Length: 304
Length: 289
Image 1 (cartoon, helix red, strand yellow):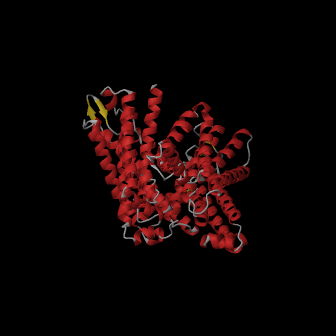
Image 2 (image 1 turned 180 degrees about the vertical axis):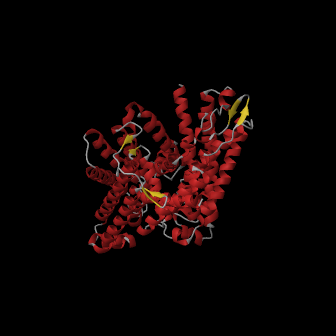
Image 3 (image 1 turned 90 degrees about the horizontal axis):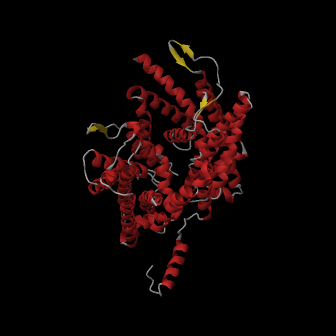
């Protein structure tokens, strides 16, 4: 059973980083910096619990805030460019963050053992969960509580004025600007919210793996982050969840029995999925169809 | 001190020479198709692995290996184009980029299934030592690569400005819609541009592998990132700019390695790119995709 709990942990954290890219994508911007915010959150939360002795919740709150602050600070200069230029600028930022942690040493002796980030060796022994006797199931439930919370928040955003503003900017910047929206403010705010979610996800990731190193936060993770919402479709937060389950649950774990051949199929299946459903799994017609389906089974109450 | 500075500058230019060809191939695809092909490096890596495979199992001369590198890179590039770029038309540059990233993993996996060890030897381009003059040294390989980059640029200029294919490609840069209306076979020209860029990449991969005399699985990501960095530093979509950007990248890396240490070398390069993009001069920001 622990295997499935572990898998659910991975899917949960990947859903979080996918959601952090989702809200930025709503404004039509593609950011490869999410892995950078994720790394900042991971190192910050790990250092707070291990070196400063904080409890997990304040440490996660701090990592989310730090992620938001970094995203906001990066957003102002970076969002002056758009399209593929933004992709590259954010990629440069993300790789910069990774290389920063590659060179980052901050070790403190604790009970005869030196703890803390050590450059290329990474940051070992982030043992808050095992030290406090959390079981795999506890950790899994803890992670999914945050996933559900974040999804609920974004779902609510989507139904509020703020969501409409984000999508307006994503659909047509010129039109959005002409009705008086401040493009920079909208984009930077989306980036900030995304940074907070990524920072939170990173903080959680650091604690369930107990060992983080710079190589985990490279261009691979950054591309996964934007692949989930694009693969899942931007119509709904559930698309990102669905894509994370599809990629991590089916493509990575489900096909593990294929051994070396899995990665061959992995790439091909993502490409096939993109070509068959260029607007994602949950595109507008599918969402409409689902809505009707639920409305019918729900006795016409239209609860969905 | 001054001698070190001069030697570092020479080393930087030599490293830049190896980035130059990579950047030219990258720029060709970006300039004409407005697409970022993340699989560019892995396709080159596949080409180099194919050549290494032949070299290990059958043995072949340098020229034959170069041909295998180029052909296998073109084949891999065509595969990427068919799957990632042909199906995604206007307005889905990002979907194409994500798809090309998915194929990245696939191409690397193919290469590593064929040659699973971490490091393989590659026959050297030139057996003799470096050239020395006035106490400074320059590797012959670097000169060959720089010459190759300049030659390829000149050839590309000829193709782009003196052939019907080139006219069609340049028409697509100005407006793909108008080009299509004017009767240009846009998918075919795209395919041609892609094949050309892959061939240049394959040549770059061959020269780089032969000058470092080894291939590793890192080659794919390395080629994509260096090509991308050099292209961006040179201002997008300009071929001479790509060569200059590559040399600038080499210089920045060599000097930051000398002053700040090897660990911070790559960090400085990315930092420079971010600053240039975000707050930098107009010429680098204006041509967004």
